[in-house]
Length: 241
Image (cartoon, rainbow, N blue to C red):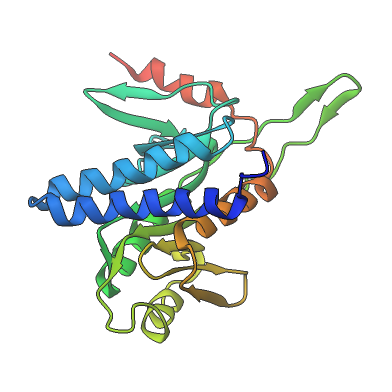
């Protein structure tokens, strides 16, 4: 086992991700096809390397009041406690309570994508989320406050001449509150995250691998999604004619 190298394993992981993102950009000519391929690379990455309590998919998000989000490229949901995922004509719809994080994926980042992603993420965060008291052997825990939903972007390239830097930071800082982007990866250049007060942008290194590890850490500290009030959703059955 002396020939094993953790550094080489991690470098290989990043090189594989970056190569597939780059190939989807160079080889596939149609913009929609490129977009689907980029989404697929990130979804496969999360499916392979995130703990199995999580699931990543392209989906709309719905709340118990019947409001829907925009379609989101990558939604990371709770796989263990989510009671249902709707599938209708190839489209997935997940309950708002099950969501940990949402991401927009594109081939390249620019100011338009930042604004677009901020709008998409806001459409998820503004949804209503139920939370029930949690029974346990010694009694009942109070209803848990819904966890923050993390949002971000995932791309391969940057349209800015500097790659990352002040232009990216200024665009990110334009979104506050429900439009906040918390983290992201520009695989050819670096990654970023927001610590609640300021943005930190890291250039070079192995961005995709670093971002993956940071995302896993964020999910760990998020804890568990609240206990969903299933009956709040079932009440809509009485409205079906």
